[in-house]
Length: 98
Image (cartoon, rainbow, N blue to C red; front, side, top):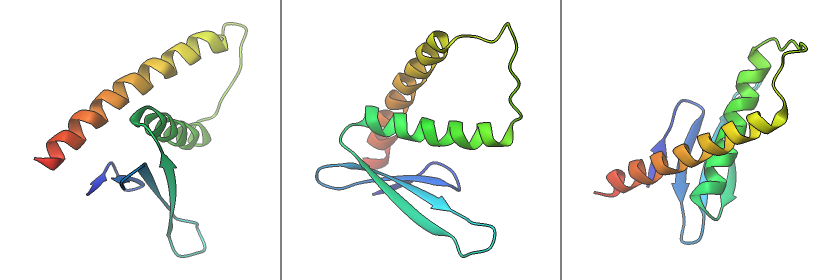
């Protein structure tokens, strides 16, 4: 069972793990896939969010200011997003099996 999230990420599973499949497309070479294995949907959600956040941050110019939020609100926000993503993946994967 493979569940495609977007052009870059897909999910799969084996008997013991959830598998995050990332398609990497270098500018000068042929695309290839990288797989990472996770024991729980929470770990998988966190890895997916981290990958997407890194991709987004590299495209954005980041400026710092005196009014920039501290890491505590950022971590709280990320934890909430991971929980929501975990619930979404559970629902999507349950519907996929039907």
